[in-house]
Amino acid sequence: MQTFTFALRNQASMSEERSLNFLEEIIEEHLKEGKYEHIHTRFPPEPNGYLHIGHASSICLNFGLAKRYNGKCNLRFDDTNPVTEETEYVESIKNDIKWLGFQWDGEYYASDYFETLYGFAVDLIKKGLAYVDDSSAEEIAAMKGNTMEPGKNSPYRDRSIEENLKLFEEMRAGKYKDGEKTLRAKIDMSHPNLLLRDPLMYRIKHAHHHRTGDKWCIYPMYDFAHGESDSIEHITHSICTLEFIHHRPLYNWFIEKLGIYPSQQYEFARRNMTYTVMSKRKLLQLVNEGHVDGWDDPRMPTVSGMRRRGYTAKAIRQFSDTVGIAKRENMVDVGLLEFCVREDLNKKANRMMAVLDPIKLVITNYPEGQTDELDLENNPEDENGGTRKVPFSNELWIEREDFMENPPKKFFRLGPGLMVRLKGAYIVKCEDFKKDAEGNVTEVHCTYIPESRSGHDTSGINVKGTIHWVSVPHAKTAEVRLYDRLFKVEDPSSEEGDFKSYINENSKHILPAIYIEPALATAQTGDHFQFLRKGYFCVDTDSTPEHLVFNRTVGLKDTWAKEAKKQ
Image 1: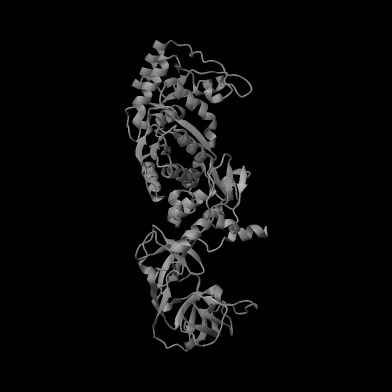
Image 2: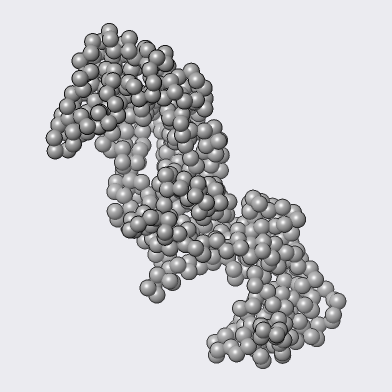
């Protein structure tokens, strides 16, 4: 597997005109030749879980190609396994696609085609190309052979067409138990591609289906349902991930033998991302075993998790477009996704002040009880962003890290005798400080320079540091959840032992009561902000007007890159 790391020095290339990818080259050639008047793609998720960043890339690819070439893209749910599929997943998938900025041309379900697929199976039986097998799953596996030796024909392979039709009808009628019989395609038990050694077409499952209820007790296998569903919908370009490349000959075989619309399959390499896992099975383990707080946990690579964390749809689309598609699997640096998020939020997130680890700053020469209204710019990157009023008083909350009792030479914040600018306000000089019984600093006493007000500074004093603050009598409180990468290693799935042993124990840290400026009190769920000097944050779904909750979306800088350099 190839690893791609994207240096920020190459970020300018992200906006440059890119060359065509191999799928676009194929499509343009097809349109040029007149093979198709319009292209038709589809996104075919199985509704057995929540979508993750890999699915998001596939969504951007399929819907993006349709949009680029004035074609259509269907949403089709591959709901052929009633045991694992739920309506909850269907609705979450539709919600995620809409949030990402796409709208499907047609909404379909493989279950819409159950009667048609049954008819296709009967057609193959009549052509002598399918048979009912009484062998158990273990017996079928044993007869299949391997890459070094051919398989063995089932003892039921030569049943008559009449008998197969009767048995298949009885399977549908519910006469047999789960696993008692299957329907298999009759191809070649010595074929070098093991998938063509009489693959299963139907299995018996007496289970309630989320759409068809108990109407059916036989269900088509993926390889039988997928290509035929594409054909029914006249999909021109059926785009799958690379693990399905060996399925393509079977996809073509069914279409050819049935004589139906010749949809064609194309494969691209799936994307894996550093510091996470993409397997649905492993993600389900994380949820079921309580390692995360559900599918929409902000540390999860699910679309719902990223949305809750504060990632934007535009950033995810930018990430998908930047990474592009390839013909070999690769590991994409999560730092690229985080960069795309920062780039988007930098343009749209208002700058606000919040103090996460507070100590009190008292301005001894500012009139006690007086409040000054300061105009602060909301977003310097948005010319229409406007300003807001921020109250200023003689008592302020500042970050504990912005004061040092014995500061080093190049410490440009507060310490005995040191001066600093308060963001949007005045220059202050540290005169004194107080400690509690344990020796912790509790108060910093400063004097301010009245002539140094930001925008009207006539003091002639230059300081190198600027710190943020929140007025004590006007401050509101909020909870902050500091999220980080879920795993400590780049590729937890490739490490020895249980992948869960590499979970980052510091991936979630809760600060129950921070101080925020009063303008944040009306923030709504999903709103994005940059907390000055602290990073980008958004309002969590747990938030209420009485108890605001903010999630850290991403820091202002990639701190993991620095740690990697140290190692």
